[in-house]
Structures are given as C-alpha cells and as structure tokens.
Amino acid sequence: MDNCAMTADFKTWAEAAPELVAVAAGRQPADLVIRGGKLVNVQSREVLDGWQVAVKGGRFAYVGPDASHCIGADTEVVEAEGRYLVPGLCDGHMHIESGMLTPAEFARAVTPHGTTVMFTDPHEIANVLGLEGVRLMHDEALLQPVSIFTQMPSCAPSAPGLETTGFEISPEDVAEAMAWPGIIGLGEMMNFPGVSAGDPKMLAEIAATQRAGKTVGGHYASPDLGPAFHAYVAGGPADDHEGTGEADAIMRVRQGMRSMMRLGSAWYDVESQITAVTEKGLDPRNFILCTDDCHSGTLVQDGHMNRVVRHAIACGCEPLIALQMATVNTATHFGLERELGSIAPGRRADVILTSDLKALPIEKVWAKGVLVAENGKVSVDFPHLDWPEHARKTVNLGKELAAADFVITAPEGKNTVRARVIGVVENQAPTKALVEDLPVVDGVAEGADGTCQIALVERHRGTGGVTNGFVKGFGYEGRMAMASTVAHDSHHMIVVGTDREMMARAANRLGEVGGGVTVWRDGEELALVELPIAGLMSDSPASEVAQKAAAMVQAMEACGCTLNNAYMQHSLLALVVIPELRISDLGLVDVTKFELTELFEEGTT
Image (tube, helix red, strand yellow):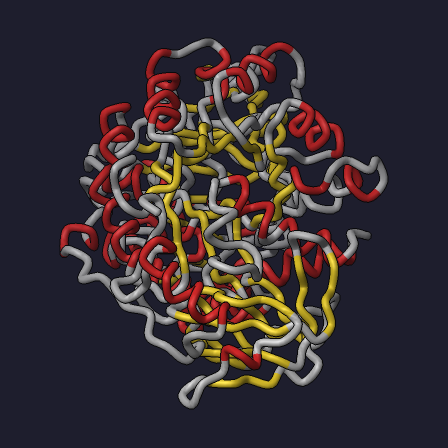
C-alpha cells in the first residue's frame, strides 16, 4: 500500500500474496506458528480458544483452529501455554515530541508495552524547524521495527495572528507531504474557528488531504456544540480527541466523526466519555483510544496504550470492546483495516501474548512477524537518524536575560491591579480565565495568594522579546522558577516563577544547553532535562530521560507544586487554541474569543 510505512525487507500485501496463499494452503511452510493459546478476534469480538496463527514474511497467512499443515522443518513454533493472543495496540493520536524522545527512542520505550502501531502528528517540531523537521521525524519513523505513520501537521502557527512560530506550514507544504510514503493524513486541525469561518487556507489544506484520499485529523476544543461545531464538521475533520464529557463524545459520533478518548500523562478524558458506550449504548466501533501526550516518565513507569486499555476497562468497558478501540477501530479509521489492527490473514503480524485481558501484562510482542520485546525488554534495534547540527541549535534568545526583563509595570499611580490570570485546571488541557486583585509594590505588579508570574521568551529569531503575565494553580512557594522550551505549539520558552532573578537564571540556562526544562530555587538549579533536538527531544534512552524527568517532578514538588503531572500543564500554557486564557509572544490570548486581550482590566485602583 502506498500509504504504509515499510521497512526495507517488509513486503506489501501484493508482493507477499503468493506466499501467504501457499502457506495457508499447506504448500509452503510458515516462518512462525503460535499455538496453544486463546485468540482475541477483534473483528467478531470473541475469544477463540485453541486457534492458531501462521506467519510468513511478517504477515498472518493462516488464522484458524489448526495450523499444523503450515509447519515445516524450519518453522519456529511458539507455545502460547494458554495465554491470549491479542493484536498489537494502536495509538490513534499522539505526539512523539511530548515524550521528550526521538521517534527511535519513543518506539523503543513503548514497544515492550505492546504498542506496535502509532499515528503521530509532529506539529511540535514543525513549529521549530518547519517542513524539514516533519521530514526528519517521518524518515526516522520509517526506520523502526514497529509501524509509525505520520500525519502532516496542519497548523503552524496553530492560530495565525495570535502567535509567531519559527516556521509556518502552507497548503503547498501539505500537498507535497501527501506524496511521502509514511504520510497517513493531515494532523489535527487546531484552527477550528478558521474552519468554521471558511478560512481558505485551512480548507485548502483539508482539500489537499482529501484529494490524496487520506484522513483529516480534528481538534475542536470548545464546549459549543451549536452551529460552529456543525460548520467545523462540514469542513472535513474525521475525528476529534478534544472532548471532555459524554455529550462531546455522543455529538461527534452522531456527526460521523470518530470520538478519540485520551489518557495521557495529564489528560484523563476516558472516564468522562466512555459512558456514551457503557451506559448510553452507542456503537463502540466509532470510538478510539489514544494518548495524545505522554512524557517519558509515564512511558517508563506506567505504560502506553496498555495503560489506556486497562483504564478503559476499569471505567466499566468490556475488555474486548476496549481492545477494539485500541486496534481495529483505529486501523479502520485510517483506511488500514486490511493492513493491520487485527489477527487476520494478510495483516501485519503484530501480536501480543498476555495472560490476563484485564490486567493486560505484556509478556511477548511481535511486530511484522518479528519478536521485538519480551517481559519488558526490547529484542531488536531501533535505528536513529543522523540529526543535522542545526536541529540542535534552535534556542536563540538574542541576549542574556535579567530580572528586569520580567518586571510587570503597573499603571502609574496605582496601588493594586485587577489582572487577568491564567488558571491551571488539574488533569485537563483547558485553563480558566481568572481575574485577581494583585498588589503593586514600587510601581511593579506582584503575584500573591498562589498567583505567580509567567513569561513567554521568544527563542526562534533572537528578538529578546519577553511577554509577561500571571498564572495560578501550581502552588509554588519561596524564591523559585521553572523554564521550558517545550511550549505547545509555538515552542518559545515558558518561564513560571515567584522570583524574577530566578526566572532570568532559568531562562539563560536553557539558552546555554540548547533547550530543555530546568527548575531553580534560592539561586541553585534543582533539576535539568536536556532536550537538544529542536529544544523538544533527546536521543538518549527513555530510561535516562525519565530519570531526569523524575528529578524535575521532585524539584517542582520541592517548590510547593502539588498538581498531578504539572509539567504537562506548564508546557501547554502557550497553547492558544484551547480555552480559556493563554500567553503568546504577541500578548495574552482570550481563546474564547480568539483575540488578544489586555493583562489589566478596568477597575485597577
């Protein structure tokens, strides 16, 4: 298939068909036979005790009650010993960059958890390196022993006129990428107001994707399910992962979309939406499980798609339905039902051995017929690209920052200010638009009562620009600051702190190391996660990055933060396409109106 990522020695179905037929008929021996287990058939939603599979050239040739006629002298025979044979798990929507890892290291981290297929949107790196960055991600994805399909980013910038990115993606870029071998469709269309308003550029990108016969990803981050939502659906997006409640899931599938329910490191949207299936009885084949954003610590400690499936089951979903949502439903959505997502003839031989369908321990994993992981350890190589040097030099501050760059000057003569404050919501992507009365000291507006400062530092063009504001919800105390060059989606630098000197030191530190995350308190650096590639990723092993990320979390807690996965909340404070209030290099953004707004309200005294 033209739109399938293939390793050099893996054949298309058309190339492999003669051998598959011969093996199934018993005229030629299989490479691999797995027998003595219970086959989970996600096509018919049943468990078939004793069914066996025969694999040839990385694809299933025979799936049935007795594969003995497929066994030859050189056939590898694996005894399942009563365990379940489950299709390899598929992540229907995700961003590799959120793991702080390159595609190779991300794949190495998730493969032992049973993820054999990923549909990735590299719009994070697109904002930093443009089409070249997308191509680098795409090319490294194609090298992996598991299947990684790339969605061409649709929105860089995510909200034109409200932020400035390092690069912009054009309809011409989208049309060009549609011819690349691993491109499966268009990444999430975040500019939902633009689509609803009929913006020609957004519709041109969607049209280029539709002409290529590929899938358009959705992103409708608004609770308004009225005409604006209907206009968005009419614009072409085929799925959406931004729902947070049952009504969101129901309306999406009623409009012919697939409802993608996510469990990431900080997004817990499965429990609130899966009742559309478990209680309302909607057809489960229109629902898909995904992660969206998982950082390295979650991957190493808790798992990946196996974690999402377990969670869905714990929320009341039947195990076989949850597995459909993480396998065949996803494959069908992307037009790949004949290629992957089930244990059936002709499909890629992606299969998991597990002893329990609810706890889902991942004991063995095959991808394209090759044993890639066993008992939590990978057994094959995950090749790296040679990333160009300029991809490691993307943090350009333009000057050394000082405490003065983070001063918020109050209107002249005022003793207090009524400020718009970004309110962090635990375990959810949306923020709250708060209004707080803050003190003024020597003409400078100061944080108080849990409100601290936030700054966005321009890092693509070296302008030296700093946008200052206020944020509440992290619980920070003392003299501290946290800075990160991961700042969805523009990926400037976000600095949050209670002390301007600490904020300057944290920002300058990331300029020195070429990007990452750093936490400072009382003049000392408590933690540093180096992310040298585009300021977003490391090509070090996931275990090493996770260890540094764990130290980062501990440092945030030492500074008073009690939020679950607060780093993910930090990284989204510049995401100007999710309500209600965000920050960009152009100022404070009211995302309910999609317009810039002032930091201070009338009523300042």
